[in-house]
Image (cartoon, helix red, strand yellow):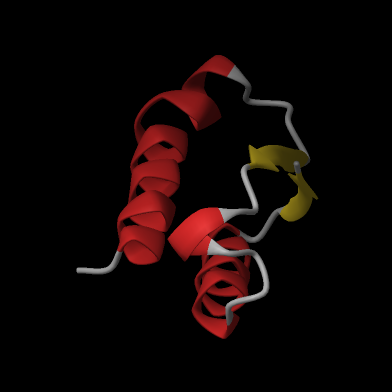
Length: 66
């Protein structure tokens, strides 16, 4: 499993286990991401995994890359 997929799986797990219970009225998710190193935000897999996650959760997802 790649680091990017592990990260998106962790976000998915957190949201489905805790986030949707703690924030039932939330209409979007804001992710703050580190965009450097081997997990560069320019990598296609990074964008693909986050898009798949947003599609699955059916929520607005804003991503801020630091």
